[in-house]
Image (cartoon, rainbow, N blue to C red):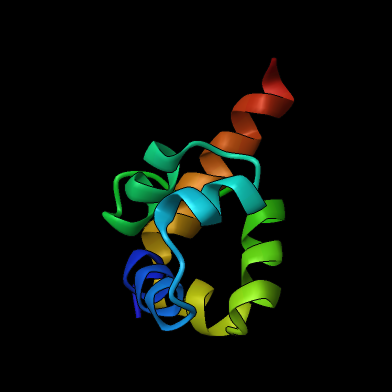
Amino acid sequence: MEIGKLLKIRREQKKLTQQEVATKFHVTRQTVSRWENEKSYPNIDTLIELSFFFDFSLDEILKGNDLMVSDEIKRDDKRLNN
């Protein structure tokens, strides 16, 4: 399952708003919206926190979303090279 769809489903199951999730994870509501709409992805640290909070497996997400893994690797490479 794509990370954005999973995050939205789990957020709605917990009856939370995007703003409540944003506050909990120290991001903006717009960031949560971008995650849910697959326009951006949480960084790996936030993804780990989200997996604990929403009770999902990182293996399930990472194996099912190669694009996210590729984007994360590119971001890490960019950070290391700067």
